[in-house]
Length: 269
Image 1 (cartoon, rainbow, N blue to C red):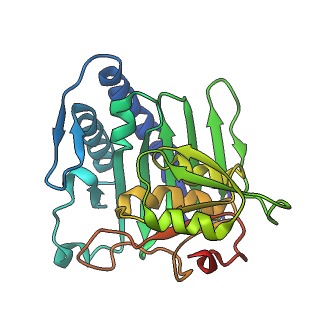
Image 2 (image 1 turned 45 degrees about the horizontal axis):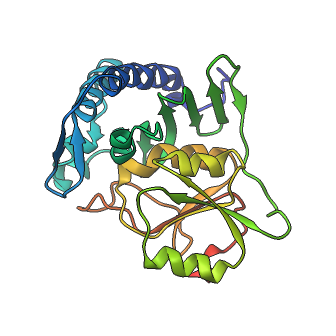
C-alpha cells in the first residue's frame, strides 16, 4: 500500500472480507425460507438482518477491538457515549430488507469507517449480484464483479447533452421526488434498491440520486465514500456534505448523490 495513504486504508481488504462473509450468511437464509418481523419503526426485519449483524459486529471487533461498531440493529447507544467517538465503524448489515423480501437481489451489505464525522472507507456488497464497490480516502473507488478484475470507477461529467439519468428508489417514492423530477424536465429513470442507487452514480451510469425522504446514517456512509472517491458528492439539499454522528438522531437530512460536483441540484426542488 502506498506510503502516503491514510493509516485506515489497511482496513479495507479485511472489511471487504467481512462484508463477503456476511453476504454468505444472508444468502443461506435468502435461498431457504425466512420469517419477517416488524421493528418499532414499522420497517421489516428478517433473520438475515440479525445474522449479518452478528457476523459483521464480531468480525470488526476482532479486527479493531479499539473501535466502536454502530449498526442498524444496535443503534440505541446514547449520543452522550457516541459523542466521544472520533473514529468508529458504521454498518447496515442488510440495506434493502424490502428488496430482500421481494427476492429481487437489490440489497447490500454496507460497511463504513467514519473518522472525524466523515466517511473515509466504504464497502457496498450485493451478494446476489456478486458485485461490490469499495473505496478509501485518497485511494479512489473501485468495482469488482464475479470472475472479473476490480477496476476503477468514476462519476461522469459534464452532464451528457439533453436528458439527465436519475437513479430512484424501487420502494420509496413521494411527492417531493415527483416535484423534483417534474422541475428537472426530461430525464431517464433507473429504479434500484438499497445503496446501489448511489453506486450507479459512482460508476457513471446515473447523474443524480435524489433522496427526498427519510434515511439513516448507516444507509449512506459506505456509499458516500465510494461516490466521493469516484469524483462525486453526497450532500444535503443545501449542498453541504453529509456528516455523521453530529446529533442525537441518526436520521439523515434529505440528500443528493451526484456525479458532477459543480452542479447545484437544489435549484430543482
